[in-house]
Image 1 (cartoon, rainbow, N blue to C red):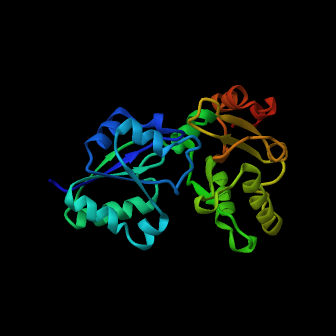
Image 2: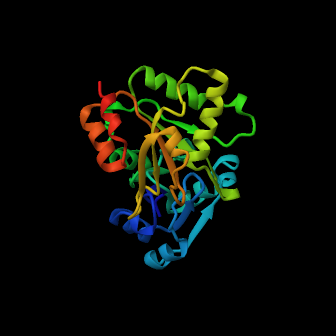
Image 3: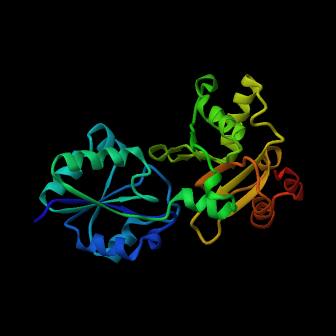
Length: 268
């Protein structure tokens, strides 16, 4: 048997997001692993995927991949065709890049089967143009606001350049904690209170997106004061801060995200 490790993207919502190529790859594998801690797939079911693929799927933890360097996956890949199932699109998470590098260095051939990504999904749902996004950033859970400045500074830097900012919201899968849009805004408003640079205030335009990839995502654009009182429903949630708006982007926010007509006055 040839040694191979294939990273297969699961997509965003449930086991039906898996591509035909991904499904075929699982069926051909000798061993199949899945990690489910880097992102939340709200309706994903391991048991349903096992029935569809007729394969046993072993779930690996953050400890398996990061602290133990994915050794059990690499050991399996050295003996035969091994698949690692990853939420979204593989290798968006740096953990998986590191694993792929180590596999190649140990003589294991690697391959990627891509899946839908939250990055492209958020862009499509909001109507904000892809080439106008700057650096993305994660807003973490924290008990000490003074130690978390990076998300605020990234939004500020992008805004100064007229670029949009995609904010990933923290996930603690082992604790079943998934940051909401309101919690993310609360973190940024608390930093604003310290920094006072008028980056994220109650009058700042933002876009909240929940359950991207599902049949009923929630997409709402408005000023922060309004979004703080919106009901976005179940996680996962994402947050976008628009930069300079093209008139088509402003129209898209009004049409797709129920933004107030006043956003059209922000077009530059």
